[in-house]
Length: 463
Image 1 (cartoon, rainbow, N blue to C red):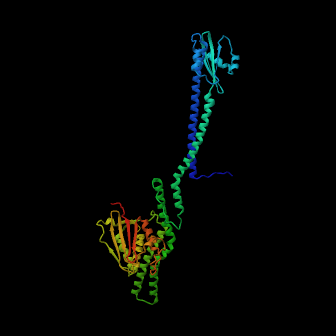
Image 2 (cartoon, one colour):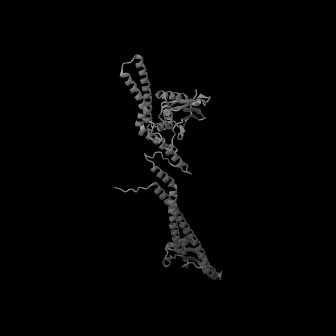
């Protein structure tokens, strides 16, 4: 069974940067070493050429230049282990003894005779040979010397480069670790924030990161996903409670009407009236059941809803009529004085049943918690939104509890004498969120609550 080392992205990035830096350092150091060594060899080769020619002139042309040898000794510093050799060229001579004496191959002499010059390298020694016409005849002039730079300076260069590589490697490690940490610091921040989010804290969101467009977009996308997950999670968790809350009223009315009708014989007119009430409540029950089931199935993803044109003013009239039929104590005043001249600005793209359910919850809460005082519902429009404002003059909500009003089952501390389950407003908020609407709640204890709903005006094709 093989062993595989699993590395995180942070470690991989650090290693990639480190290896990249180290590879560049090695390539650069190798280039410097090879270049310097090549240059030193070429320079030494040229220098030995000059020394050989000077030595030949001094040795073999002393009659024409009596001061040549003196000049050579005075102004030309001898190379390390420099030796000069001069062999007279004779017909048929093989130079085998000379080659053994110098420690060079006999072919070296043959190359000098054939080409006029030859070079031979043996360890750190370099041999240069030329054919030279002296005063007393033609000679093979040979100079040899140890390449001091290669034997000493090159070793120093190696040590220097090795130390430089080690120091550069340490700096590369520091830079790689620092850079990778800087790069992944925002990701670690996001990771730590995500770890705090669970099914009990889905309301938490990631903080927007400054200076990094890609991570800011990632954060925004993740927060949007959390919005949908939170809505879906709340919907699934509260479906039974919502169904009980929304369906109990029409079921109670149907059972009550049927029970009264069965208590004793009644006239046909009374039976007809009872059946009408049962039919109305059954229709209401059917609408709410369909809305709740549809709501649970779609999960508020905003993509599979059956949307259509909805006239908000007509919807409000329908909501008012429905609520007052359910409870005759509800006093709802619709203020239409701010209606726009263009009726198109009253049309939105939405699911009429779900919007009906959301508005019914908000307005019925206003009626209930104002102890059946009159509730003002105003309707207007801006360039982009249809705006509804629901204002009551009831008990209000304590300011420190406003942040909890969308938590399922939460009820304010001053609502103990009112019936309710604390699920109507969260459900309404979910429906409005599905329609990309804005919901704002302001409240003052014992003075009332104001709820503003802004629905985007629908964009419909004309013609």
